[in-house]
Amino acid sequence: MKTYLRILSYARPFRSFLPFFVITTVLGIVFEILNLSFVAPVLKILFSQEVTETVVSSPFPEFAFSKEYISSVGEWFKNYLVSFSDKTEALKMICLVLIASVFLANLFTFLSRFILAFVKAKMIKNIRLAMYDKITELHLGYYSNEKRGDLMSRMTNDVKEVETSIIDTLNAIIKEPITVIFTFIVLYYLSPQLLLFSLLVLPLSGLVIWRITRMLRKKAKQGQDYLGRILNTIDETLGGIKIIYSFNAKAYFSKRFTHENVKYERALRSMDYKKGLASPVSQVMGVGVFCMVLYYGGTLVLKENYMPPENFLVFVLLFANVISPLKSMFSVVANIQRGLIAGERIFSVLDAEVKVKDAENAITIESFNDSISLENVSFSYGDKKVLDNISLTIKKGKTVALVGASGGGKSTIINLIPRFYDVNEGTIKIDGNNVKDISLHSLREQIGIVTQDSILFNDTIYNNIVFGNETATEEQVIAAAKIANAHDFVVASEYGYQTFVGDNGMKLSGGQKQRLCIARAVLKNPPIMLLDEATSALDTESEKLVQEALNQLMQNRTSIVVAHRLSTIQNADEIVVINNGKIIEQGTHKELMENPSNAAYRKLIAIQKIDE
Ligand SMILES: Nc1ncnc2c1ncn2[C@@H]1O[C@H](COP(=O)(O)OP(=O)(O)OP(=O)(O)O)[C@@H](O)[C@H]1O
Ligand SMILES: [Mg+2]
Image 1 (cartoon, rainbow, N blue to C red):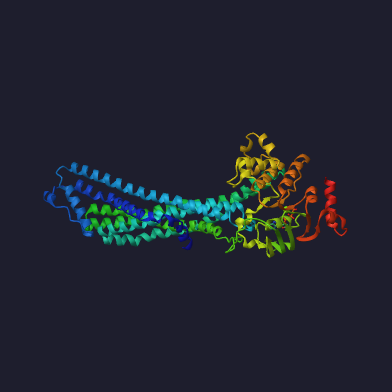
Image 2 (cartoon, rainbow, N blue to C red):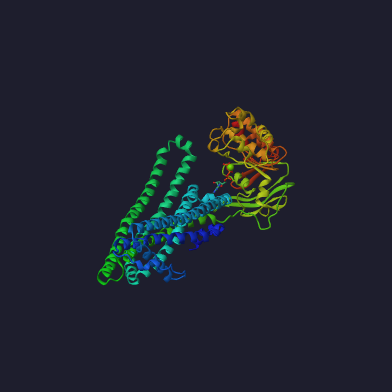
């Protein structure tokens, strides 16, 4: 129920539409019932023998809000029609009224659907937007545990499911009960006894349908889970298509996909079988109940002259007409269950705790003036301790190089400074302010990052450099590209700065991608630069270009560089050797080389030298 109300709460901004919706719905129903009731006068005209002249002059009943008024209007209309000496005239009359009534019924039904469709589209849009905002706000740790495909499935399929299972059924929830109530009122007026009988036999069919829909619900949940896994595999396949080709892993992935696909197929099939079963079963049950009423009522009319035959026919018609809303009231309950499961999957994303967020009285920093310091910092991903008691100070304007064996924790240090993750112990300070007290926005405003793997988006080169920096002018973009040694290859490409780079920069070389990422950082022009040098080897020419770009980037800035290239290492003001999450050696290149106890650094340099 809570989930249900929460989904509906997305309609709150549009609550002013509710009265219109209810009014149009009710009017639609009233005219629909009226349409069916026209059978009675038609029959009366066709079968009545005598013309009752006397009633011609009977006055139109005076308005009152009562049952009597409605029935007297009905009587008046019937008598009015019967009073025609030419019965075809009466028929003509009734046809005209019927057309008008049908027109009105459909007009109001259309209007109510229109309102609902409008509100629905807005609601769904807002839910999707809320999810998108959430996923761009969550801390990185969240994505280590959740699968991307599953998240995508939640954002698309589950939202769709909520749309069809909950919002679409809003119509049924509001309309069908009103239809049922109104129809029952008319039925009661026609014959209380027959209505009572009908109500006694109705639950028979309801029970059977109820059971089938319960089975459906279980299958639906399974189906949803399997679809999430399928999307995961597709996501991974597309992301790693090159590797899949080169390692001839097509068969492996294909097997994995087939496995999940078959599971999904089974769930869908089983669901559809049951769905398929539901319809004939409910039809047979419905007709069964209908026939019982027909038989019982028919005998009443035939034997006891219990009510006029034309009224009995209206009763039967209305009753047949009420079975479908009743059925959909039940199936709505089942549908809603499915929607609720989807809703819960959505809300579990929306409710995920944002672990890295602004402190309550977060301060805003405008500039970087003095130093970055890590004080006894420890960090673990889950249970795995990755950094152990790291202390390090980087003065403004200096370049610090982090070196060391792979997996030592260098990239992790880089991740902690802009608070992609929060430290477990110790503090990181910028100008003496704990980063946890600084607003995320202003903190990240001071920091530029070039990541280990060049991240580009499927957009133009220009937009990849500008990337959200709305104030950048074209001159600035070109200047940044020049500093990053990217300008030449950009103008040489087919559409210059408007060339699309493909998914994740697929159309560019490794070195070109790196230089675009550097240009992006240059354009942002932050005082602090975090560089995670790519480990992937580039050819000497490209290497030189990238190296130059990096040197330009670091000029006049405070930089922390995870360095793999000898030249970067040698140029640094301070070198920090990290191994297994600990600082094992520290100093300038000269100091480290001269002191014989710094075996790790020397070994590292020796290896680098061989590479050069
Ligand atoms: N998101 C993550 N979840 C769990 N463990 C992680 C995660 N990212 C990194 N690790 C682990 O943390 C350790 C340190 O990783 P890190 O990326 O900091 O190493 P690195 O020094 O940058 O290595 P390299 O030189 O190869 O880039 C590694 O053992 C790695 O397995
Ligand atoms: Mg790394």
